[in-house]
Length: 111
Length: 111
DNA sequence: AAAAAATACATTGTAATGCTATGTATTGTG
DNA sequence: CACAATACATAGCATTACAATGTATTTTTT
Image (cartoon, rainbow over the protein chains, first blue to last red):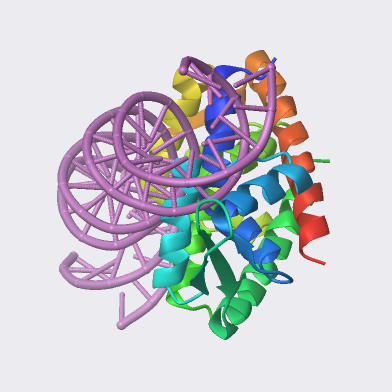
């Protein structure tokens, strides 16, 4: 099961989907990078590679959708926390709208 | 509205989604390339560029998910009709399964 | 009748993105 | 003391959508 084609396809589906999921996760709380991977793994069936996440978060930051701040800890490596900006919220709303129309279309097709 | 970021994002979402949609469309009927673009435009909010469709159909063919046959017409340019193969149907079923789990996860996140 | 638009196929080069591999540094565990 | 886990990051590769361009025929408009 899960032929090679399907595996590659799933990777393609992530292009775009990941940013959408991450912005949604950041809507209610701020999280640090490594934690985002864990959160997404917990609440979806999706695994985000570290080599995917960090460049992605940098892009979102560059686009002004999130900000970040370093938080030192008593012990351990400092964490970079991400917060959704006002522009991020607006953008996310537009994305949700598009996603829902897409989802509706696909639901019609798959039955 | 529809900021530049969202436009680029929509294009990224199509990576993977397009193949999924096309296979779904081909489940019940065979269509030729140009017709597939029209069908998808009609039943979804998605526009597929010709420069996207023809290479995509070739990939699906190479992977054995579809076959094609030329059909001459009394007048006009010959049409290349695509049919879903047995492997195509199996693959599509796996894709539907993945899509539904993804959709369920995202639905939880967006509300 | 000529010009323009539509039909129907296709390829090339570009930009964007996820993934593997790799790297650094610290802390916790067997 | 070695190894796994935590936490950040980058570089190169493969994949894919899209704009631009091309060919050829047919239909519509002027």
